[in-house]
Amino acid sequence: MEGLIASLTIFVLAIFVGFEVITKVPPTLHTPLMSGSNAISGITLVGALLSAGHQHTQLTTIFGFVAVVFATINVVGGFLVTHRMLGMFRKKEDR
Amino acid sequence: MSAALINLSYLTASVLFVFCLKGLSHPRTAVRGNLLGALGMLLAVAVTLLNRRIVSFEVILAGILCGSAVGAVFAVKVPMTAMPQMVALFNGFGGGASVLVAGASLLETISLGTPPSPRFLVAVAATGIVGAVTFWGSLVAFGKLQGLVTENAVVFRGQQAVNAVIGLACVVLGGWLVAVPDDPVRYLALAGAASVLGVLLVIPIGGADMPVVIALLNSYSGLAGAATGFVLDNNVLIIAGSLVGASGIILTKIMCKAMNRSLGNVLFGIGGTVGTAPAASGADIYEGKVKSASPEEVAMVFDAARRAVIVPGYGLAVSQAQHAVRDLANLLESRGCEVEFAIHPVAGRMPGHMNVLLAEANIPYDKLKEMDEANSGFAQTDVALVIGANDVVNPLARTDPDSPIAGMPILDVDKARTVVVIKRSLSPGFAGIPNPLFAADNTLMLFGDGKKAILELIAALKEF
Image 1 (cartoon, chains in turn blue, yellow):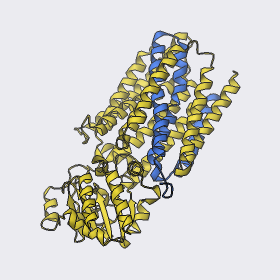
Image 2 (cartoon, rainbow over the protein chains, first blue to last red):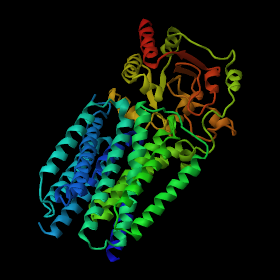
Image 3 (cartoon, rainbow over the protein chains, first blue to last red):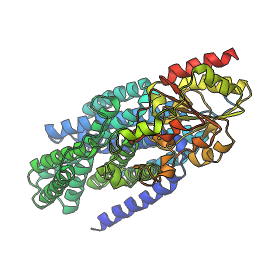
Image 4 (cartoon, rainbow over the protein chains, first blue to last red):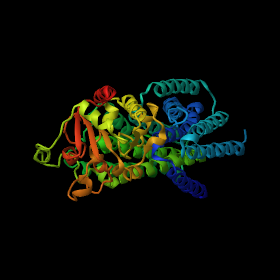
């Protein structure tokens, strides 16, 4: 039970941190924000690696493998496309 | 590696994720922020690979190679106009991964023979529901944006009742899983029901409401990750997931506010935005008052202009006109006309869609003005050029309290000296209502495809 409370505490506080940080993102960067945060949500990869590498049964390994593929697409694609997009944002002088 | 060290590394990764999002608060620091986020992810993955539970790396390696290849190809190839559907698809993958991880975790725990704790089971059920809704909802959103399924709202009788029943079924199946956890088939049933719910929740949403759905699914994909964190008892998942969850919620709120609608209104289509206006009212408003202009006439207006504001809408993305618009803006500036861009928060199909398109065309971001700032400048503007936008410049939002868009904040282009609207026809926008702007005394309609019309305008302007 104590473990649950600790996790819930982290969850709630992190949501507040998220609200504070993201409220400051200007509308012009909302698309990169979405693709970037999308890449971060690929953190499920950590869990997927454990399932795929633990190889408990064949079924869990298959689940793990597909999850690794999905999450890696999310992570690699997300960070890369965000990088590509942000490279396009320029100020007047450095055109 | 000791557990303490692993957890410290996860904490470092979480901090890097916060820095990543913090960096995104300004275009100058955004690239670095994104790289910090990627670094955090690399750290989290590297530390996880040192975990003693991992007995073999072949499957992991194969998965990472496949995923990286697909992700990289998507990231490099996708045109900026298709960004909404790509983000939708990626949201879905995140949700799908969460469902699978929670499922694998459940199977492992059950086969070990020790009775799983209710806390673990609740987290598994929550992950299954949120993840499956995200996965299927995102696939439908992707299909709509990509044009694979109809972009219109798909509505049938009793839709809300059906959704409520399926939602209830998900909760009941979840409760059953927690009470009698020995059979993983229940998890499958739970994920199946949630999948149907995901599809049904997104099909009634269409067109201009898509930004809200994408932002919401973005939030769900984060929450699914956080729920997976509860399953695995892993803080980095909880923190990263809730950061993303918060981000999606904020964007959803901004989108709803920009349409003056509640989230429930968008999700359940209350207020019936589609096809409520009588067809005849369009003819009354437009009859004999719409002035169709040639590119030469419009060029004449621009020739005399000292200050022009360009208002892009989804039509700009459809006709891929961003580079032509850039050329027009440069031409006008070289002739001594000040040019700015006014961007409505819900223009396009995702938050910030127009900004990315214009950035792609090398238009500096300090020329892109938000709604409030832009509205304070229209009265001093000689020409407002509306390209492929409709509802977001409809003055009925200000004047007609009975209109479906009443109270929606709009760009007050009608206050400019002259308004030029580039549009294919007088057909209504997503709200399904006529737009008196098109019939206003100071409005010229330049009918045609956005890109073609702008190129013709540029050619005509060069004649002066």
